[in-house]
Length: 192
Image (cartoon, rainbow, N blue to C red; front, side, top):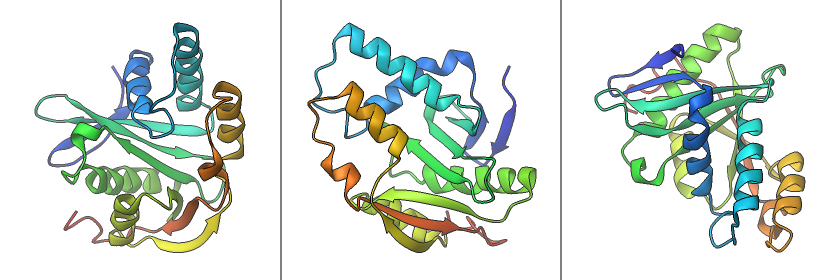
């Protein structure tokens, strides 16, 4: 059984485990970059493996988000680059679970746990400039805009180009990300 990381009134977040491979893959399939791309069995096998390796990298700490009352999968939340003084927070919510307040609720609970665990007080957040909803959520949680960035992640972009040679990845490489710093005040999430 995986360790429970944090709980809220409606959610619990637990550490990722081997049996989560399919959940992680299904969540990644919802990303906009994957829509409309031809996916044969060889591609799917490669992408599943890449996806799992990304989710379980040694410098990433992942939590799987579930509803307390039904154990229904909500999404994944993680800290990347955990060895740095300012790790990077990431969250993905299944489309069927969006717009219910689960994202902010999970962010606050996960960050409180992680901030205490690592004795840090801030994290970096990178959001696609077109993701107005996530920008709004993080700004409401108090995240402060730092800068625009010219790539999502050089490693991910290189892998995507290799896996998807025919895909137009221009939007991912040209000032497509807004970087924020998130520090949770003591009362964060009281309204979330």
